[in-house]
Structure formats: C-alpha cells, structure tokens
Length: 122
Image (tube, rainbow, N blue to C red):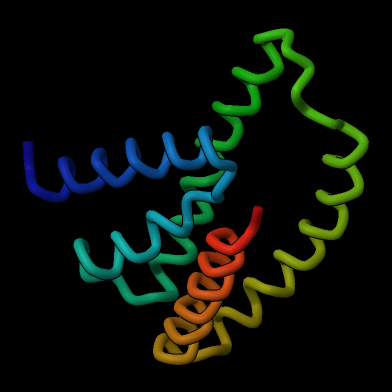
C-alpha cells in the first residue's frame, strides 16, 4: 500500500475511534494530521475533515440507533442541529475568507482552551 493510503487509513481509524468514544468531531485528530502528515493547507484540512466527519458520524449514529440503547436525545439533536447547520454554513464562508495562518492560530487556540477546560473539569 502507498504511504498516502496508509496514512489516511491510520488517521481515519484514530479519528473514528476518538469520535465514537469521546464525541469529538474528528477534526481534533484529522486536521493536525492532514496538515503535518499530508502537507495540506489548513483550509483544505478543515474542509476535508468535515467531509470525513459526515460519513463517520452517520456510521456511529446508525450503530447507536440500531443498538436500541436509546442514548440519543433527539430533542437536543433537533435544537442543536438547527443552530449548527446555520452556523456551519456561514462558518465555512468565514473559513474561506481567512488566511491559512489565521485559521491555524484560531484552531490552535481553540484546542488549547478546550483541552485546558477538559483537564480542569471534575
């Protein structure tokens, strides 16, 4: 197998497991991996990660639905998705208007803030 194929499979496995186990969107894993390991620009890594997250999220959601565990709170899904869909549309426009350097800094700060918050939570 080629290096690109192996790298993408490895990133996909790690991001898929992290997403299914922790609910992270995969971007936390995929975006840095795509930039550092595949040499993508920040913008391309973000857009590519979002496309992968759609597919992997559908897979995990289908599994949760068919497990009959009733873990999904559909009321919260509906309300949150309404805001998220609208914000994501405008956010993707904003992402394209930023430079790769600006986007990288925003992503880095967000990861630090979220990571620190999770570490200090009880």
